[in-house]
Length: 469
Image 1 (cartoon, rainbow, N blue to C red):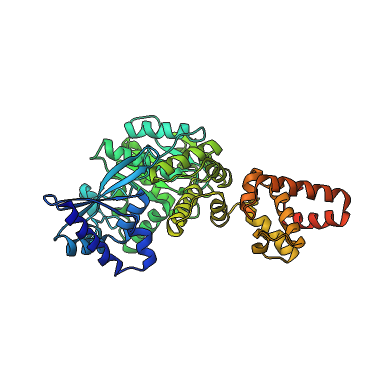
Image 2 (image 1 turned 180 degrees about the vertical axis):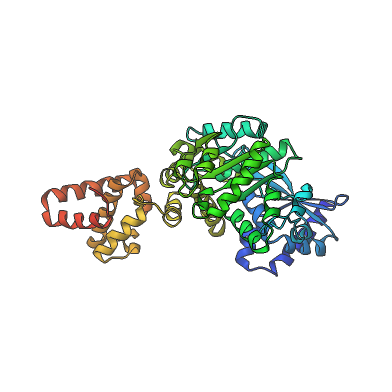
């Protein structure tokens, strides 16, 4: 019977293929493997190679797939996915697909982008906590730079408003994981105490709501709503530094919640003492609980975060590529995730392995930092430009003197300015072996000793890298 169901699935793919481009079909639909069809449950089980593909399909093609399934199988058929979450150990996870009507249906609202009113306060079941369910303590990897804030956050989640860590003020530079941590506190609170009114709000949205309340003459309703919250989580409060009226209003909300023993969690890119424009009466309240600094992750924590994300997304990335990304992402968790997502997308779309060359290209485009480390591409590009030859000729097997010279100089500078082994340098510069690289470096070094003009020429190239000798 399953053989006949496979034919129905093939017809489903045929319908999808007629409604998308060939590239989209090959990238997102061709990797799907049909497993079975449950007639009683009206469920089609398929396997996809990573959670990333599952999330992309559910976000952009759920209606198209539902239409194709209904036309191929029967009405109201649902998809169930088997996700490959750990290729190396063969671990999978089954996930129910969303119904298209559930995706399209309007979500219950508490006037999220408008000023909350007393009506919102009177209907607790309609309060949307505005939390990201993916940002949990389980996915927040612990390291030396975040151990204290993470431990405190978990304690707060277990006993919100009951510990001495109220308010909990966490600060740190952009990309260090502040939003993830405070979101994890909210998710854990809601999981342990479902009836609590938990709300995550950005400082900017809070200010938009307040401005809307002033315009509509409903400020009292706005304040009354926020005073009903049991766990209030506010992100990026440094944005209020130039908004004294917003700060005054928040003071009244804060004071009310604090006196009632409600939990308050605040995040900022700087400690309270550095918040310009905030009055002392509010600064003293920010400081009366616990202030914790969330530092940028060190190289080892970056490696741990990358490995965890690879396991979660079913990716296989070599240790040298992981180390390279960790060392060049400037200690930003956001940059780390962005680089891995880009690597995954490039690998899927172009059906190419995730190697060092691809990682260098992605880092160069995705991570903007001062003193950006040189890549092989940077070096070859500069040397080729200086001598007026194309990279294609340098990478070729040609023994023409001009090409050999550029090739040798590129290898010499690559060994000098990157941390790559000779074998890797040779592979990226025309597919040569490590002995060729060593010979080239030796030839350039010998020439530098006896050819002053050549030394000045090489110094000019190195100067263009804007690196200190």
